[in-house]
Length: 329
Image (cartoon, rainbow, N blue to C red):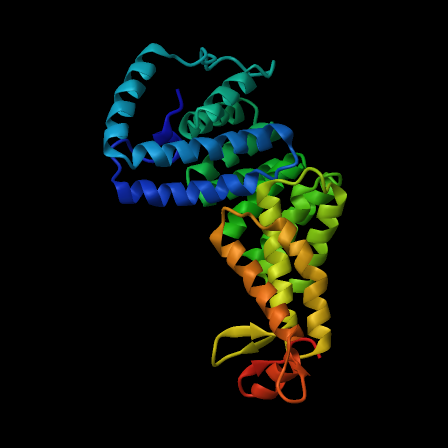
């Protein structure tokens, strides 16, 4: 039975507000991990995303939560984890990885961190154990310790996974340039991935490097267009959206984007179909953006007035340098 409290890193006595805040934080982490090139991690992330949705449904309903708490107590009383190796065991046979998987699958990052720490104490040169210790600390919200452990793992044996976790840490703290560096190193170490390239694109986008971000997202998409996760699609959507908005004009008075010349019109028409294929119909903000862009194209193509001027000409004439950003010329 999944322990939703451990999954969300909260106490069983947490309030509804604390639960909602934890759901938001943990969901963001697992959504990002759902594009990991490692199939096991990706599958784990997808399962956790489903578990988070179920946790939200149950824990925010007082009646359902009460019944769940009773069932969880009974489950914990009847289920015991695999036997913990003795302090003398040196973990040389790698059997501890089965136990690590057990803790990870239950969302028990406290026990996972304790296990990894035991392995690190017994085998200080074990790069994988350092990475797992860092990852477990990351999911407990201990960014400083997570960073230290991942850096030690990389020092011992450079690998894409600790670079990925470091990238997440830096993204969480708005250090987008550092995150981009880490995701780029992950790409170097595992160039056949798709997920790492999308993460590079997201870091570039958040750095304000819109054109580079879109180029990176397009490269990642072309690499494997038939197997793209929902998170990767969301990143590609955001890169397309930001680039289209950057290319168009912006009326500061109305707070709206508009097309004011033929070049802008053709640019939007070129990229709008791509953006449409990335839209998640269950996300209202994405649907709204798509509809806004379609209306912009319609307004720009529509002819009106005595001289039947194209709409983008009218847009240009009725705005001014004081209230519009130029966009493409």
